[in-house]
Image 1 (cartoon, one colour):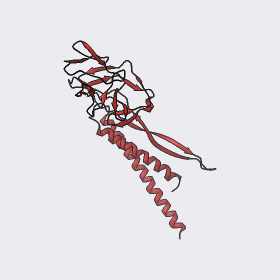
Image 2: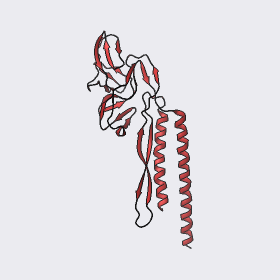
Image 3: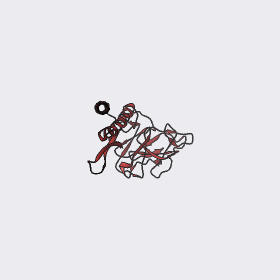
Image 4: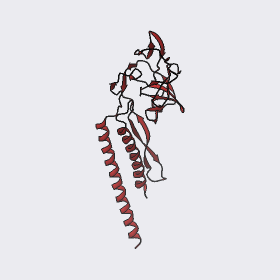
Length: 236
């Protein structure tokens, strides 16, 4: 296979990865707190001696869309939504993770946990504790939880120190090389943030990628036919 074939194959591999990401986005249209992802293409140029350089397309980078999504009212005491930048900080068996999914419940010990049992952390990195029988729990916009007029904890909001280091781990969880507190964002009790995936634009993107892949496959088929013709001609 010549350089044109290898270049097209790298492009096709990147388009396949992008199609996988798009399918994952569409599958999470209704997942609270889900962040849309995209694929970033880059160019790798390699010298080939005295001839022209060889250019390869790489679609290995992942970009997370951090745009605000709409809020849905649930009325749940421990359903929290973020308005603005930032993430909740969650303690998992694999380490601390960031998430925009704000559905929590008190555990038997009184700690607020995710549906998977991971603990929500406060602004100091400690588990958020609500004593059993504390009564009606209210949350201020700055994340301060209180019951009976007494403050219980203040939920912390965090973001990646370097936004490009934000990596999707599983579900709605993200990891980062470093995190820092966020200022200016507010929290709403009794709401959950929707997925920020736009179905119409995502389907349009899927069609565009599919057409680009089909065009690349057509080129490879023509290249294969051309090489077969050359081999048959030289073999006579």
